[in-house]
Length: 471
Image (tube, rainbow, N blue to C red; front, top):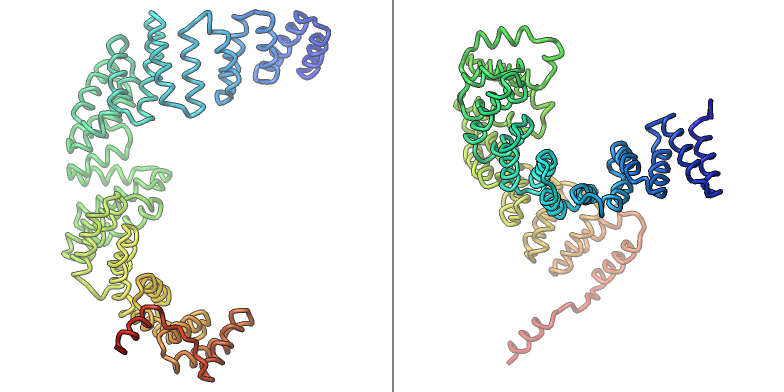
């Protein structure tokens, strides 16, 4: 088959299959696979043919190759399950667990990993299964079970990746336990940069900055450790020596801000915080740094304001509200803090507090049409007609060409028996609005009002009260 392409070899193999010459077809498929080992079509046909000829070991080998190339394709997993079922229960359950993983059924995958462990006595196979089981537990939010599996692995195999995974799990809840694991790791892997970097991270988080500097690998971590020890000159010397590429990284501007903060230069600190925030809009760090700067400057309003922003980005709405209210008490005329309070009350679904601060906002800015409309909608929901009318008048005055507002005001005036106002605003609406069915209806209402043909809209309760009053 010299000079034959993969496509030609596959066509020839299919011809042999059509003639029930499966051995010859198998050889053609092997030839196609040798020509291009990344061709999954050839590999699939080769594995299928091997399986049909009951060359099970070959089929297993080829399906595993297919799985490595296309790990998200369930085809190889399902075929391997058939091949492993009677011959290798360990591989059967491992494959079934992996299939459930790619199908998103992670809790069920954990059961199969456990069954795989129970179906082998080989330490290496047990460790492989436990490692995947631990990773799965971590993904589905069962850190204690994941920790237990990693600890079982360490009883038999001191693996660097296991130490790091275990330390990462401990980090959120018990940093001393994480340090203990990493200290064991660094004894076994003294040249591991990954272990050193994690040690540095934990020492920074726990305030042991001297140890953090000792294990720091990156220039940024070294500078951070120095700044936290107030080794300002050494840190600045390193900052100056950073490459142009490093100076474009967000960490650079954050560290420059810290340097200037340590030096007491608050204006430069704020400038670098602004630069850092441009590339880290969702990070709480810029707000925290600004809050500390303003505390140093004795600016209570901006300190509380930025602590509020910090807590919002951290997801703590209760503390954010306290800080915003403190900022508001420092400067109740500042519209920015009022808007932030409106947004925060809206986020926590406190409609009445939200309305309260909306009212404060329109007192300061009578032409804030969006907030006026928000107040109108709120008081309409609550049935407070007087409030609705007050804000409709204000809205119409601030935006006299908004024909939708003019119509709404006319309708509410009519509903509240303010006939002169209803006529006035229907007329203004008809002058401003484009032709529509709504405009025709407004003409009818205006005609009834001007001719005195006002429909009886007295409700049942009004009629009942009127009846009793006549007695």
